[in-house]
Structures are given as structure tokens and as C-alpha cells.
Amino acid sequence: MRQTETDDKIQEKQAILIVDDSEMNRAILTDMLQEDYRTLEAENGVQAVELIRKYSDAIDLVLLDITMPEMDGFEVLAIMNKYHLIDNIPVIMISAERASSYMERAYELGVTDYISRPFDALIVRRRVENTLMLYAKQKRLVGLVADQVYEKERNNSMMVNILSHIVEFRNGESGLHVLHINTMTEILLQHLVEKTDKYPLTQEDIIRISTASALHDIGKISIPDEIINKSGRLTKEEFEIMKTHSAVGASMLSAITAYQNESFMKTAYEICRWHHERYDGKGYPDGLKGDEIPISAQIVSLADVYDALTSERCYKKAFSHETAINMIMNGECGAFNPLLLDCLLEVAGDIQRELAVNSPEREFQVHETVEQILKHKKLHGYGYSINQMRIEQAKKEFFFEHERTLVFDYSELTNVILFSNWGRRLLGLKKNQLDLRKESSLLQDQNTLEQIRAELAKTTPENPSIDLKIEIHAFGEMKEHRLVARTLWSDGEEALRVGVIGRAEEVFQLDERR
Image (cartoon, rainbow, N blue to C red; front, top):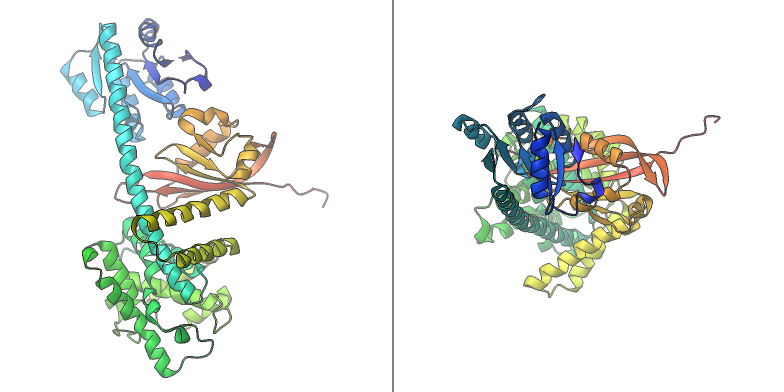
């Protein structure tokens, strides 16, 4: 296994991996290409797979022989397909085998071209150039589409959350209520689908319900201030007015006729109208009973009650986590689906930990965002969206600027990793953002990086988190850190990993004499 350039220089030009058991053939191809490209060499399939895994972000093309010892070219292609490496790294097969069966199998395994020996230098260069140009255009198009889809989804989610926060802000409640409902809804739904197949929910359904949960109380915007912010107990007449918010919220959504066929709108309607229904039929507005109540509304109803109990309101003090769970289980807040109550008990600890992550700083940022919207509520259309995007970016920058731990946000779509200011200083970097396709060598601890990648490769949409101890250079000294990270996945039947977020904190050893 030989590299014609050092690791840090591989990134300067497009890199081509030449895989052939013949040293002479590798030398010929290297001579043809080295003027315009960086080249790596492998003498068999095993070495090729090792290099592809190690430099998957840096290798732009593979020239692959078929007949080789230890592992042949078809086996290499099978591995590249298994790990989806061939999706991003084009392969040109170069072989003396001319049988149509070989060519057919190679194309079935995903090669972009097949060159037979003996080959002409001009043909090889042209086909390499054309393949690289084709893939570069394809990557740009995929990147543009991915960016547009991501931006649309991000804006939709952002606008839902902003609108719901406005309702909470007017209600005099913590802006974290919406975030808590979203988090708790997702935790309960994930556990529900693991526990039973009674409700056939996909990951797409879970994300849609969790997002739509933010709109559960949108109808409260119609309730008079003197009722919604009353510090004492509501009268019977006032309570009847308060109860109208669920039907009013559903009516508001029904009035948006342009999106009535959208699954998100249908889910939001279910949650708005029926999140105060109870399993025994004693809820409102329609007195639905049992599974007449959509599972989306059942879940949000349970999350809403828990957060109402554990949050301080103008009319009550906050109950502890344990007290709230006991009150719900004892039926003091109405009847709930027994299956969901089992789920609540089983994930109660997870819920308490996850909700504790929402710090006072996060709440402060939510209120700041809402206040800015209320001050600039006359903004419309494009200018309004741009304003919200700037606010969202400002929030992210705030946390990355003030967090005193190594925090990172990595995008699989762009191969860009963003570090917090503290993380940048800790790692000795000159900037917060690195393009790992070109700048991974700036990270000193390559072995640790490979260790992290290996652990991330084991994650799934169902088990997205890792928690491990790593050794990294921190302010110039090798120190042990605890890394906690979560992989982010796309929706759909074939989920793809789209990013990673995480943080690393130094592990302080206690003095053994204590």
C-alpha cells in the first residue's frame, strides 16, 4: 500500500485510489494521472477497503481491478454497496477480463465505467475526467436539493415554534412549555412503538406529531386576558370560556383551506381539538372515549398534563416530578390510556433528565425571540421570514459563544463541523468551522476521530446516542474527556444519517488519598 502524497496533501487535488495487484499496472496508471490528480495505491482488495474507509471523505474516484488476491474487485464493490460508500465515491473498473458477464456484474454493483486492457492513456484520462465532472455536478445538485429541503423543513418547524411561543408568552407561561411538550411527546411515542405494534407509527409520524404538538394551545389566543391570566380559581362561566380554546384552535386550522390535505395539518387539527379529551369519555369538547381519541392527541394530552403539574403558573406552584407522576397514575388529572400510563412510568426517568436540559438560559432566549416578534409584528412576507432566520441563527451563535465545554454540530450533507468558541480554543484551532473533506488533518487526534467514527457507525435511528471516554489534546495536553453525542437521521423508510451533535467534557480524577 503506497501513497504518492502525504495525508495532508491529499486534499489539495482530487484524489484517485488505484487498486491493482500488479505493481507495473499501478505505476502506469499513476504516471498517466499524477500530473492532474493525487493518487493512492492498494495492491489488493483488503488494502483498498482499508484506504476507502480511512479516507472516504478525501477519495474522489477508485480505479479498480477485478482479479486480485485476498479480496477481488467484486468483493470490494459489495462492501462499498453495503456501507453506501459507492453512493459518494465513483468506481471505474479496469480489467483484462472482457467477458460480458464480468461487465454486467460490475455495472450491477454500481461501477460508472468499465475500461478493458490494454488501455489508451487518453481514454483513461478522459473517462476519469468525465466521471469526476459528472459526480461533481451530481453532488452540487444533491446539495442544492438537500439545502432547500432542509431550509423548508427548518423554516416550517421554526415558524410553528415561534407561533406557539407567542401563545405561551401571552398566556404568561414559560416558553419552555412548548419545548417540554415536544420533547415528552417524542419520548413517549418512541417508547410506545418499541413496546407495542398496536399503533403503527413510523419515524415520520413521530416527528410530525412531535412538531405539531407545538400548536396544541393555539386556540388560547382567543381567550380574554382577564381569564387566561387570572391568578385565582376560574368561575364556572370562565372555565366554560377557557374550554372553548381547543375547538377554536381546530377551527383556526380548518380555516387554512390551502393545506387541508397535508398530513401535518390533519395531525395538528387532531391535537388542537382533542388534547383535552379523556380515555373514559369525560373530557372535552366532544366527549370522545378510548381509541376514538387519535393517538396523537392522547400522547400530547398526557405530556400537557405532566408539564402543567411540574411548572409554576400564575395560579399554582410547581409540583415535583414524583408528585406529578403519582397524581397522574392515581387518576387525579382524568383518565388516560393504560398503555400510555405504562409508558410514562417506564420512561419517567428519561423524561425528567431530558426536560432538565432546558436551562434558564434557553428560556431567556425563547422570551427574547418572542419579544422581538411582538415588537416587529408588522413585518410581513419575505422580510418577516428573514428576520426570524436571523433570530434563529443568533440563538445558535449565543450558545456556541458562551458554552464553556467542547460543543460541536456536524452536517453529513456538507461534511462541515462547527465547534463552540471554547471547543475551538481547547483544540487549538484558528476557526470554529472546518470542512472535513479538506481540513480534517487540522484535528490533531486522528486516532480518536477514528474511534468516534467507529462508534457513530453503530448508531441507528432507534439508538442514536453514544457515550464514551476519549483522549484528546486539550490546550496542548492529552486529557481524558467524556463524549456524549447524538446522531440525526432523515425521515422515510430508509433513514440516512444527516448529522451529529454532541459535547465533550474533561474527566477529573479524584485524588486517591481522599
